[in-house]
Image 1 (cartoon, one colour):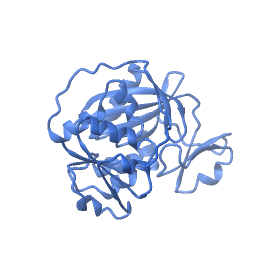
Image 2: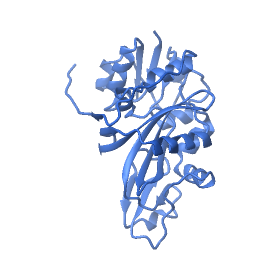
Image 3: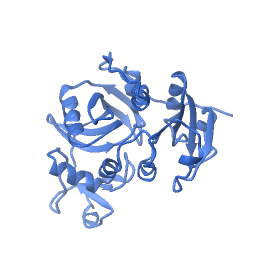
Image 4: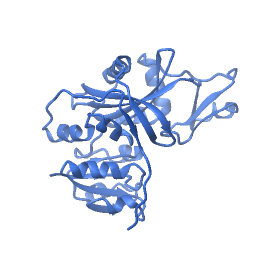
Length: 283
């Protein structure tokens, strides 16, 4: 048994991860900036923390830490117990301007920047994640010269998210793509789709960016062309979908960090549909 710490346990997806870690036999320590949250009551231990002051990383007794918040990746770098990539990779992926420039330089297909002649522009804050601070608008020109945003051409297509695991040497281990069927800020429904072109696209990205551990890649496919939309250099909130399909990215990440990982064949339930729903709970 290990003491596994996870952040953002006040989020709507946290309880699934808490329960899964407990099923694996681990002691779960949850942290969050809020105290009155349901996830607190499912953890074995809970701490309210200030995310702007990462001293809690040293104050809490834990073995491994899964961060779920991008800012934690930039603040909490000098601890080998944190399951994350290096600082350069984290910054490249989290900052949308940096990621765009990196992709252009390294021949990774992304939606190009909008021009004033376009009818629509897709606007995102450079530190946005998911659908937060991301919107399609005709009134995008005011954002084009604002360094806090990036404005790209709108790609109409099918959106996929890909959970991927990379070993400590930066080598691709495995990935599971899934079609995003119903989503708001987080995925509510997904369908596993082991498309070889998506797997190959993921392998290519891993060969060009130095990752380590669990990552999440989001793409849009239009006319069989794959466009990179976003990279989360950490475990994603919807990775539980891949776990239910037969790829336990959490267990394997823990095994990699603890030096106990042995590559095995994954029996993935292709075309499996996974649904997420809310339920009520009272203390």
